[in-house]
Amino acid sequence: SWRNYTVIYNITVLHRLANITQLLYNTNMIEINKVFKLHNIDNSLLSQRIYEIQSNSHGLVVKGLSSYSTEYNPIKDKVFNPLLNEILKILNGYHIENVWFNIYKKGGYVREHNHIPNDFSKHYEYHANPNKHLSAVYNVKRPFDSGNFYLNQSKINMNEGDFFAFTSNDMHYTTPNQSNEDRIAISINLIKA
Image (cartoon, rainbow, N blue to C red; front, top):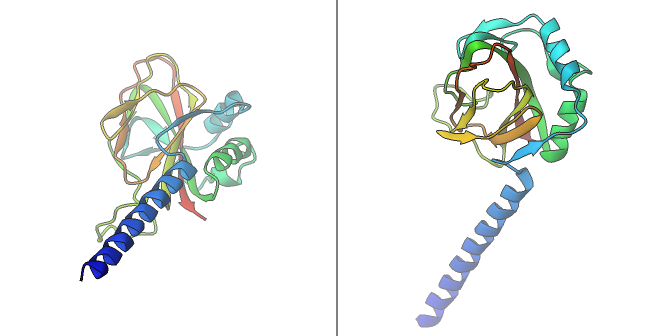
């Protein structure tokens, strides 16, 4: 009867509205695809500490160094605490899985890649849940003409002291550093707590 159809239609509409509201609510909560300027972070202290750490070459980092495959864990380093605490204030409800940094020499860049969560086997197709898995980048040192950050082929305008969060399965890369000075970026993977 028409009454049954009306009830089913109304339930369907309410269910769709609830899903849209939940999606909008979650998107507002996680603050992705937005550049934040972090204040009160001592980038000179971070840079000094980063240069003290033994870094290695990494397959994705061209003409540069990375702490990604080293034993060093910035999460346990008090010099990184102010930065990580500020990021967790912005990404409230998440916890940090891992942190590493890349140093790009002249001509250095990172190849296009994504951050599929480490806890998932590469043998399975996986798409990160934007409400569960996030990645982020923070520019510690970004001299003029030191390359740009791209997310899904779109340039993201970021300066020194800027922080940007995105869904972990988003493809991203940087263009080559044309400066004679190093560019330093800190990368972070987060998961919903």
